[in-house]
Image (cartoon, rainbow, N blue to C red):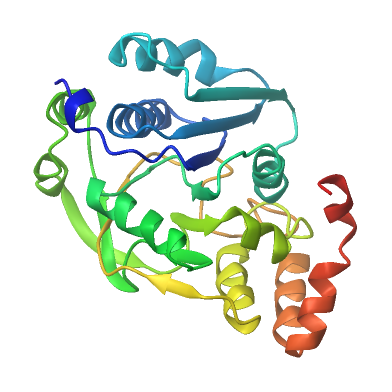
Length: 278
């Protein structure tokens, strides 16, 4: 399908996607979301894959390039070799954020999609003065999508969300999935908190922090599509079995909630990890 004539310009936006591919489903998912984003928008995409081997480059990138007919200039893939079982998501996001050159940033999960109009509306809200936008409603605004290769191929050929609708069920959405941010505000608010390691309440903390510090927080009551997948060690819900840092993460989360606004601002102005990105 030739969308060149109706492509919407998001040239002032960059999608940053932390990645560790722990199942075949996630190979298919990252092909789908990156293919959709780059086919639909003139936006930048940065993927940082931290793993024992570059699964994305070997299995996903060739199929994305074929789908886009070689037009992958807006895609940057960074691979960092690591044998650490814990996926250090917050640091990986910050490392990508530090090289973003656009004013708008999508902090983006590797399994989610939004309707085209939702990307556009949330980006415009940032241009209009919002600091962070949640481009989906709070509550029953997640569509869990169950796909196979045939369904994905049909979707990428047609770019028709009714294909996903007919293979989905409604579930809860709150603070994860994807956030759209002003890059300036993201830095000003302390970026991602690297004191959280592995799976943690960082999604709740991010919303809490931006709200408590008085940033302009927006939300759009639309659906987020989550492409379901089998789960490896770093994609299960939070548990002590999958993340040995869980206890310390929650202690930190409790400590942050006890801070006054002034203490919270001071905390995020003085974190050691920020020195790497100044």
